[in-house]
Image: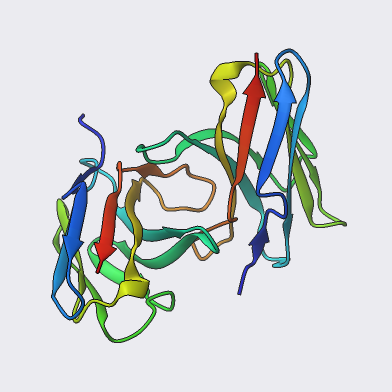
Length: 115
Length: 111
């Protein structure tokens, strides 16, 4: 398996634009997580899905952020409109059986810069 | 709120010596703890874990210690090697199946 695949690797956009980050989890994994890494807060959990259903989105910063998982092999994280404070590295991770005691497999991340 | 805290943003040690990375947590519902290692431009990768029923887990040069009463865990690397230089994240999970991470500690091992 190729592991968790995220695209794009880098995204530079202007304030107010829509940004869509994409993730393909490892085949067979039934949990998918979106994290954001910042210097101040480290890795923050934004939202996670189980069997394509959002379970906890309490970490999503505000209504500008939305995430979907239309099928077991694809998820998107959308920011609309984007703001400079959204600049961070966004990671997608997947696991089998869930995060409880089960290690997560991370993608390489998307480095987002909002100018 | 930061339920998992790594208060040392950086640590520098000499090759061959011991590296000790610390982590504190506030949520008493956490009962599984993990350490991840992250190199630049890569995602974090799993390193070692421990469940709350244990107080120590060892894997080669890496040992994790858990003190539940103090809500504290630590990662020991002995002996440290230059290839261990990375950012180390402490993580904790509970029965609700999400995983919370600390802010990370950047370890530099000097040759």
